[in-house]
Image (cartoon, rainbow over all chains, first blue to last red; front, side, top):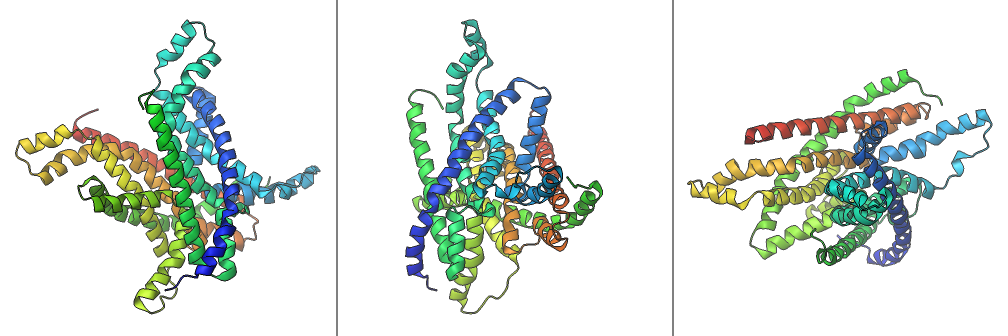
Length: 233
Length: 231
C-alpha cells in the first residue's frame, strides 16, 4: 500500500485555501445563531405563548431533520418551484442568481439557531430568577438587567456547551460542498477526483479538521480556566 | 406553488419501507458502539496510562472529524487497506457496510464520553456501600451502579440515536439506498416534477422519527426512575 506523497504535498497547500472560507462560514453563522439563539431562548424561557410554541416547533424540526435534507429542500427543491411561480407573477427576481455562499449562511444558520437556543435555555435556566427581580428592584430596566446581570452569567454558564457547538459548526461546514461552496471539503473532493487519489485527499483534510477542532477545544480550555478564577463553572 | 397533498402522501408511503435500512445501520452501530464505548470508557477510567492514552486519542480524533470526511475516508480507505493486507481485490461491497463502520466509529467516541460521565456522576458511596454488604465488584456494578448511571446517560443516549440517524443519511453520497437515497432516485425518475412533495415527505419522515424517539426516551426515563424507586 503506498500513498501518493507528492499529491499529499501539493494538495495540502491547495486545501489550505479553503480554510478561510470555512472560517468565514463558521464566523457568520456563529454570529447570527448566537444572536437569534439568545433571543429565542429568552422568549421561550419567559413566556409560554403562541410564539414560544411556534419556536418550539421550529426547534423540533431543525433538530430532527438531517442537514442534508434541509439543504435539498432549500437549495434544490425551493428554486425549481419558485422560479416558474415568479415568472407567472412577473417578479423579475432570478432565483438562480443567489450565490452558494448565501445558501450556506442561511441553511447553516437555520440549523444552528435552535442549537444555540437550547444551549442558552440551559444556561438561563441555571440563573436564579431572583437576579432579574433584584435588578428591577434597584431600578434597572429589563434591558439593562439583561445586559449587565443576566447575559454575563449566561455566557459563562454556556461556555462548555458552546465549545461543543462551535466544533459541531466546523464539522457542519464540511457539508457546504453540497451548495457548491469551495471550502476544505469541496477542494479535497475535486482534487481527489482529478487525480483519483481519494484516500490521500481525505486523509489530509481529516487531519486538518481534527487539528482545527482540537485547537478550538484548547482555546476554550484556556478561557474556562481563566473564568474559573472569578466564577464557579 | 405547485404542491399536491395527495402526491405528498403517495411519496410518504413509498419512502417508508426504506426506514428499515436506516434503523438497521442505526441499531447495529449503536450495539457495536455501546460495546466499544464501554471498553474505551473502561480504559479511560483505569490505571494504565497507555490504555488511557489510546482511549483519549480515539475520542479526541473521532469527535473532531466531520462525519462526511470520515465516511469517504472509510469508503475509499478500507478497501485499500484490505487489499494491502490480503492481497486480493475486494470488489464492489454494499455501501451499508461502510456506513455501519463509519457510524460505529462515531458512536463509540460519543458513547465513551456518555458512559464515562454517567459513571462518574454516581456517588462513590454507592460502590462502597455495595461492597460493604458483601457484594463483589461486578455484582455491585451490575446491581447498584449501572442502573443509576443509566438514568444519567439516558438523555444523552436519546440525543445520540437521533444524531446517528441524521449522520447516516449522508450514506446516499456513497450510494446507500435508505430513505434519502430512495428519495433522490424517485426525484430523478420523475424528472424533478414532484421535487417539493418528495423532499417534504422525506423531512416529515425524519421529523416523525425524531419526535417518536423523544417520546420513547421520556418513557424509558420514567421506567428506569420507577425501577430505582425515585420520582
